[in-house]
Structure formats: C-alpha cells, structure tokens
Image (cartoon, rainbow, N blue to C red; front, top):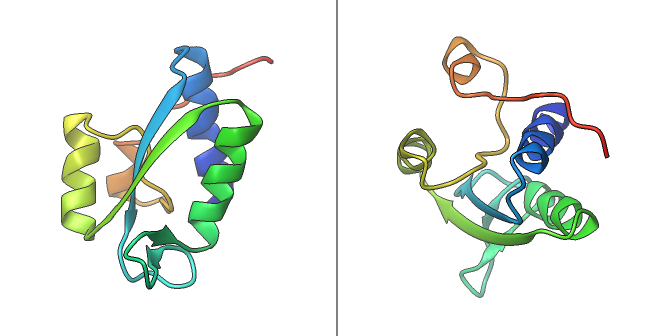
Amino acid sequence: MLELMVLHIIYLCVVAKRELKTNFVIDYKPYSFKNSKNGPDGFAIDLIKAVAAAIDYDIEIHVDHWPNALKALEKGDIDLLPPVFRTSLSQNLIKSVPCKF
C-alpha cells in the first residue's frame, strides 16, 4: 500500500502539480474514517498529509464510499485513491513514472 501511494505521489511530481485531490474510503479503520468532527482521520490520512507537507503540496482530502471514490478517480476528479492494493482492477488505474528530485 505505502509503495503504491509513494509511486503515485512521485508521478504527480513529474507532471508538476502543486496540489493533490484525494478521496479515502469511509469506515476503513484504522486507515481512513470520519472522526467525531466529521473530518477525515486515520493512519493513511496522516501519512498522505505528511508526504504532501514534505514535498510542499496542498492537499484536499475527502472521505466517501468506495464506489463513489473509484468513480471520482476514473473521471479525474481526484488524483489519488489510497490505500490501493494490487489487483486486476487497480492495475488499470495505477500510473507511475520515474522521478528524480
């Protein structure tokens, strides 16, 4: 999971975007969920915030159900849909290219 997230962020570095839009799956504790203030929370969310801060990116985070999140990725409304595990479906969605800092 982590390596796929990092590869996708590296891909975004290459295309020079300075903002990430992402959608996490709701009720996938401890990785992603809505907290008591109805905001995004969890390990994967903390990780993507830390990575975005380290590479000086703005990040817009939403939490939704898997079918809606997947549609948003397919339509290009979001840049990143973690955590993504390697499956036949995800292979068609994953894009990465080499990136040198």
